[in-house]
Image (cartoon, rainbow over all chains, first blue to last red; front, side):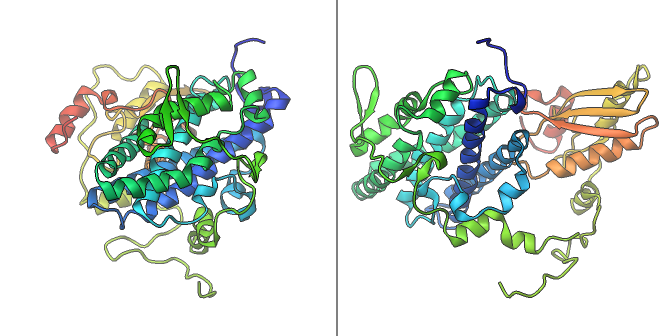
Length: 274
Length: 153
């Protein structure tokens, strides 16, 4: 195997091309839905500053989603159809994003745990041999640094207050399993094939380990992670039941009606002018 | 949703002009910003050596929609190539953020400005993100201009 890059989807090994398109679509869908969740808190965050941060983060996520959907043209897909015409059960976004979240603690689980999980998947693409994505992820990650800082800052603040700590532990606990398995099982053929061809840096197990390294120190405060001598580990085993491998999410459900209409921009397109 | 057909040509807020197809967004934006003028491009001692260099210099006249500084001084122009025979020009651009809401305005302005030049018949814009834009990409002249409007980089 040569270490030269793949300049377009055409150059990709056949067995990897579909998996990569699937990964890009999953990342795009997650970013689009996460942007909606961020936007929901622009007016409801505990402080005006946090609301402004939500607005900025929502905009970042939508910018990233747009870039990712556009990349799928290289794989023979119509980005506009992907963005505007799919049904709920065709989305690859995490079950964590299917409906609006009820509290600031649940929001922080998305902001700190799941947004970081997505960033880790981009980290895996930094040196990707698939050049079109390789040339974009550094900018995405640069922007994501602030999302991590925001999540971490607010999480620390809640952990320092007794009531906040309990509510946060509950919200993190509820999101934990979806995050753990969001990377795929250890023997995941999708990420395994991509890793073998140098398209992602590490397979599912490696990516999950990297995520635990990033969120572990905070998650440990809620009893979900533990530092061993060699690595951060989850104190809970992931539950794989009801997971739909090809869609990288829970088998059941999809974005609810309101989320779907916003993700697709239905209302906006009704007002489109020639 | 009420099911009725959406109105065509919806007017924006009162201070904004009515949207029309093919509108020059950059001009609208500059107008709504109080007609702020862009400083003149730098003075060049020599005429442009070729079409690509001429095109690059012309981009000193394309303003960033948010600040009175050219996209060249802001460091958004990563390269210009030109085919003198066909009049095809390729402009490599980056933007300050992936969700930059002004990308369309800037691309429109770049096209408009370059198509005004003799010898340019086609403009292609290629967007790149690597390396990511940072404030280090702003020119010395750009920094000075930004300081004059109270932006410290």
